[in-house]
Image (cartoon, rainbow, N blue to C red; front, side, top):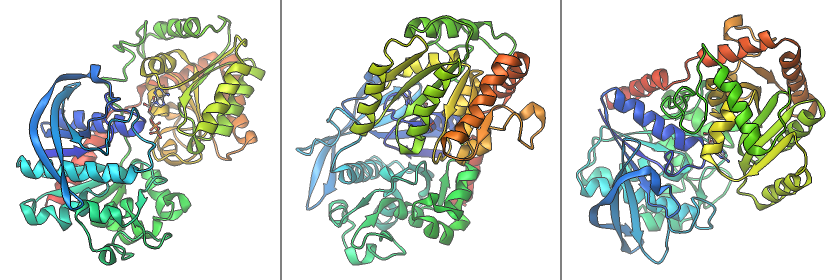
Length: 489
Ligand code: ADP
């Protein structure tokens, strides 16, 4: 099968979060299974160019219709860890992708609508006719709308779209200008509530809603989150639309790219290890402490890696840090926030705790350090308010690091409590709590720290159970292929 991914992120070249990992990991799996996969991305100035091989212009004069004129683009081609990637590079005063950051601009909807339009225009002009186009999140949710309202009539009538929603909180709500810019026009038609009309803002279109209504199939990133968005308020207002389209909606658990996340070969960690020999993990803990200037003492090391925002339960992450230090553990945090206030707060905390030999805060994005933390830590905390899938717990388990998570979204599908799960003992792999408050997280952390201190052999069982579980793309890859086959028919 021939599949084209249209995405605003792809690991490791343009990565903000899990979306990037999913696009690269799933593409790799699909290729291994004999499919042809291409990925279309914006050409950001801030990408990791050191991760692209053979970058060169492949299509010189792509004119993308935009408002009443057209924007001239070059399209670049390069390999990212073996994946075939095309990068859209517009030459216009808007300077859409040369701003030193991936996201966070006032014209975000316009930038991403342009990218989506350019990706389709590129496929049209270069005669790319994939069996399936797979779009991701609000940024590219206009893909099926543009395909079935415009490009279908220009020779792309046989293409099918699978759209994956990685995060319902961000939906892409914008005004009429998007319709005029992309050539869709006809505001009255698109504002209809059964098309793109946002249910809460009159005279606004909702990209994600368009993705749901127009796609041939819609997925979110775990079965439990699929249930949550249909049955609770976690759909952020899209529950009803999903309900109407429930026959083409489902949850597919994300996988992990086992090439990237593998403690046996990981080039970012100094000591390698596997489920039969954990010596390397203990030495990575020493190396991590050494790098972050933590004292070498017989204590558990607890970590957090990820974005610092409401979704991730920032107040509970902060509490986990203090709870760890107060209860004889060490804590390492790696993260950053797009919100200035949260970043400032964690910088303040970093200075406040600067001389504490039992904790370290690293504010920023650091792929290499993240690998060392996953390898060197004993436990990882993830007290999310909502979590569509979550990769951090799966990566942690792959590296023998025991997750302490809240029972939401993908965590429910992947982490099984040591004491309270109804799963057999050999599947239990972490600690789970329910209430998003201090007592909730403490109830799980105290059990985890207690087990580490008093029953190390029991703790090791959790480590090994996590490492043995298959979190690869093997099964989800097949699930996506089944969906592609289904919509192609
Ligand atoms: P998200 O909601 O951000 O997609 P996930 O748990 O699904 O959360 O995926 C997060 C991914 O981003 C993981 O690969 C994680 O290691 C990585 N990550 C997040 N923040 C950072 C950071 N500050 N430095 C390095 N890697 C990070």
